[in-house]
Image (cartoon, rainbow, N blue to C red):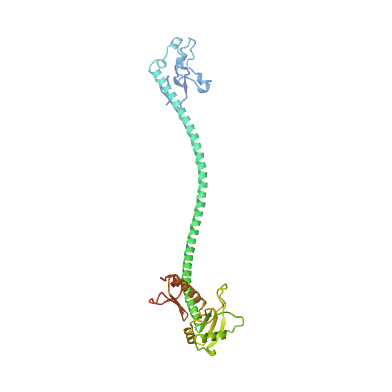
Length: 344
């Protein structure tokens, strides 16, 4: 509430018309009706002076003094100089009014400070809103990136799962192929053994004459018959089915090509081998069983291993290779090269 009227001592409401004295030492507040003033008739409200300040001026015609009710009569000039107690500039009312003015001034200053603070707050709030708006835009862009990244990760995850499934199928296929491969290897090993056995069986009736000198016009049948005569073996022409020289296994070897003779039966072959001691020629002649290529390689490897590990005896019987360490040890059948690795 602004204050009280200095004339009627009633409260001056905000909705009522009012006037304030422009004097520095006064600044009293009045109802416009109490001082008989119309706001519209005043040219400058800032220079208006209350009746109490006006009576302090030098005496003059005060017939138009406004401090009176409209229904009262005009006071005499003698009474005009007498001030109303309500318009006295001394006393607690004046002090109270000054305090009110100071309070109003402080309130105005506080309002001004608050207004300045509010303006600063509005400016900061506007900046914050702009930043929030910018952050919102950035967040939307970031959200799009995250969504795309999520889709990419999901795609990679699905692809990884598919790849895992394919890997499992490939592993199963590889396992099956490995099993089949092992089975096929086993079958091939068995078949190779059977083929070697059949190949060696096809040579059961053959003998091989090694280190027999070659002549351009030689007669192999005569050479075989002479050898049989030398070793005292009864070998007729009917028992000799075929004969020929075979190519060298090692083309760089200086030894002459061997002669393979096919006899009528394994018994005739065994009799000839039992009768052979040596050939009466310029160089030694060896008569051995006709081995397959694999058995020849196995026989050569066995002789080298026996020499290295000090085995005294290496021989062939019915297409099989045997070794014996000494006269007291047992004979050992060399079936393959792996057995040579375990010789002691």
